[in-house]
Image (cartoon, rainbow, N blue to C red; front, side):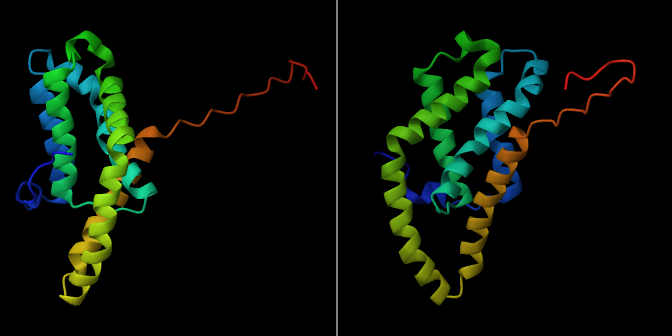
Length: 172
């Protein structure tokens, strides 16, 4: 797997700007020629797709630095721009993006898991001993935030209870 050099994903990126920068990247690459209302129409589903990898990390007990997470997703966006046909999907682009991310994690997830699991086990101990445990906790918190955001975006509305009309007989 040819990934970015560590210096590229160790850039200090804050939790609150990473997803915003990913959304800006999607808007600049795939919605630049479209009317702005289309981006805002798709924004919720785009957020859902961009936060999905956070649930993948969380389910496997992995932590991922904010910069690394951003680099992984930005690489997928670059590959979609080069090899995919986003214009063909039009209003279904957010679903296409989600499917591309899920397919990549299905094919390359084991490699990423081995990389992050191995690094996490050794680095957690080294950083905790070096007094940098707070940064490790922040990276873990970021993945939890992404998962929570993803779950909130996926939440379904509860059905309103139907009012029973006294004139209408119950079936049971």
